[in-house]
Length: 116
Image 1 (cartoon, one colour):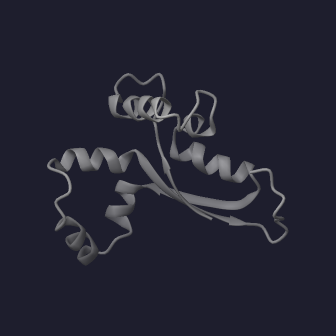
Image 2 (tube, one colour):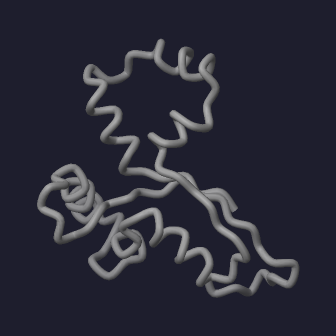
Image 3 (cartoon, rainbow, N blue to C red):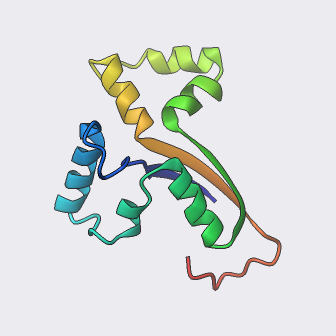
């Protein structure tokens, strides 16, 4: 399985206004309820732990900013940088740090009746 998930940050962390705004927007739009998994998996570690607890054998991931810098080649980054969809580089970096990409591998004995 491959997932692209939000990283909302620590709910008590008042130094992360972007994460708090993401949470407010998701809640107001009716996408997430206060007790939903979406709001409880607040970090990359939480996302990976969730997948392991659902029966996946192994899970790895990174935030999108680290993926951009470490996984993409220089030519891929140059091509991506040609699109000017955001005015502020810092804003784009902040958005990328609040989403993660995770990949998980199911065990050989995994069934389709998993509760997750």
